[in-house]
Image 1 (cartoon, rainbow, N blue to C red):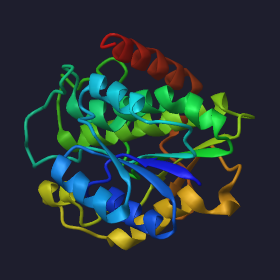
Image 2 (cartoon, one colour):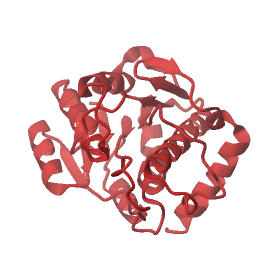
Image 3 (cartoon, rainbow, N blue to C red):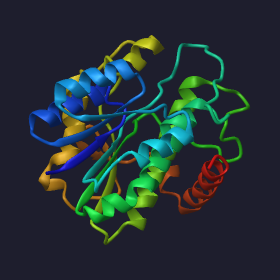
Length: 261
């Protein structure tokens, strides 16, 4: 039976994805930060739950260590949104800018730790939930110590996640593990969108269907290193395709992750 790990499964898109996949009979491992909400989703879907706070790299490592057996699909969905308008810069448990930590460093580290399990289960898939809202990432100021803005921080972290997706797809060519990312929908009515006070544009169902497609659609077997805007293949910000930038980003990322090993 196909085994799928979904991060951020206690709310919003991750929760909807868990219900949809459970209805189709998939074996699920569900991650969430809120223990109560996570337990409710796990009980309703008959799934295993692993609670962890992804703002801590130690917690990311613990999460990876509690995943048993091989893994067919990893969905990196958990994230932190824009935050309230004008909110001050926040730091993670490791002292890193919060949106960088949760939206990029956590999925990066979790993926790297779970790669052996995904390779053993190949053909397997990695799906990174990104955003159409991207901004250039400043490798010289990754923590946004100058001119902080929550929306900008969120978009920079998503650009980094997309660049990592492309980088990893190249690295895994020929292994049977595919890596893709997507903008599932625009401003769905999720908790993070409500907190930002932006109002919503798309339905949660639209984002669910776009994400579900990347997880299970057999027509996407072998498709890798792509960015999708909902169901349509799209082009990310130019920086994500720049090999020099991706090399600098990988070096920075490894230094940040190893510093908190």
